[in-house]
Image (cartoon, rainbow, N blue to C red; front, top):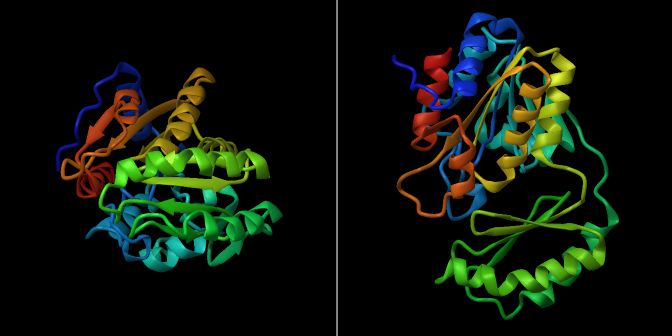
Length: 269
């Protein structure tokens, strides 16, 4: 197998460092849009063929392998069949939760989420057909992808949702045809920084596909400033037209969606 070449000098240095000292390397990947294709209903998501095998192969070779996701950690383990991957860490809800070796650590949801849950029902009662709320316990995600006009619908709903979030002390975080209401002070960048500190890493690769992954890219870039080596990879599925341009522009390497991500991970292993 031939590994694709990073397009930046920093990315090439990160890749070389990972290969030179894999025992001190961290490989962290998003789930939806990265290991699993984007689907209309979140509960239908499944990893592409070979994803679990690729993670397993990497777990035998590098210092740490992690899935960093906005979903609940236990949910991702269940739908992805990830409990078979040795030493895998699953950081769910942007790092609020951690699953490791069969154990899940999860704090209680903040009370503002309960209030938002009740107030979203009347707010969305007249929303276009297909709009629905994904209740993740620690956060609430308004999905518009199934609507007849997903982007237009999201644009029309966003001001009211942002106002609700501000009123309740929550953040309104955009994504691919979604807006998520979640507690402030959590993101994938914080999760990645904590992971790097815990495993005494010397190099890191992070793979993601959405706006929420930009914070993880920032964490990799900040790690470089501290002397670590890093590689950022954007998963951009050519079959979809809603991939955020910012992510590809920031990435050291762009690959063509989840199947290509798995091929990259397998080749890296």
